[in-house]
Length: 393
Image (spheres, rainbow, N blue to C red):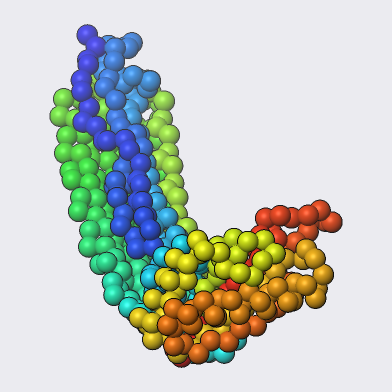
């Protein structure tokens, strides 16, 4: 009579650590084995076998999926030295750290950013602390999520539940409330989730146990299987013992090696001496005009309110154009637009010392033409007004 039995399984799901926004709040489903032992089916000779496996063979030691390290890879955005959110929320305006050669400090409302001449810096905001040390390393603590990037491919992540350690050499650890994963970087590793334990020794051998099923693979073709009802011993020499009966059996295949933790990308050093507000094309002006459109009043209102609330002491307004028209015409247009913005802010009671200057088409941020062909998207980026707020407000 052939035997049929149920084998304690392992959930077959993959790891997923999702990052939302600049402050990581992962929705983590823990790393899990990629396959589970399946129930035996009838076969010849008259001994228990498993579906898809020959006599004397049994399901392998499951592999497990490495944790998804996108948390740490994409967390670099959390290290970006950002200006106060109030500036970034102005419609049609992009607020960003101004890149400068000299060091300084940037005070941005609810947060304070210090950027030093060596490219390092730190940011302290209402919800946490971010530090970038200029050598590619950095620390971040936002909403209870702590991230460390050591700049050499290694780093740590912790949110109170999920902890990831990446040692930068292919090895690392992952743990949450129910699961622990250890990757040693040489193809070996351990996995524990509740009663399930997996050991992969990286040399073709490994073990699996879930409290009911036990699998041992010795890496030389031999191994054992037991589940409390059926016991198989494969000797690796072409024979096996199934519930005490000797049968011909193919040796067991090796347990595949595990992968490695990929190294973390180093953070880019920071060089900044202030904040730049960029008004996109069409936000304030009609094409080839320097009069602020009536519907742009709300935008200037918002900027004026932020300047007043933050106590900005000085700022420089600059106008920029694309390359359509003559150099002289574009120079005049850029100067007139910058002056219109200054006048608009002063009319709204801004006491900041404002200066206006125009650069015409001399400082493009994108190509006006590509291989002699007009590039409308590039020209649109070049038509802009910028307000530079020095580090010392």
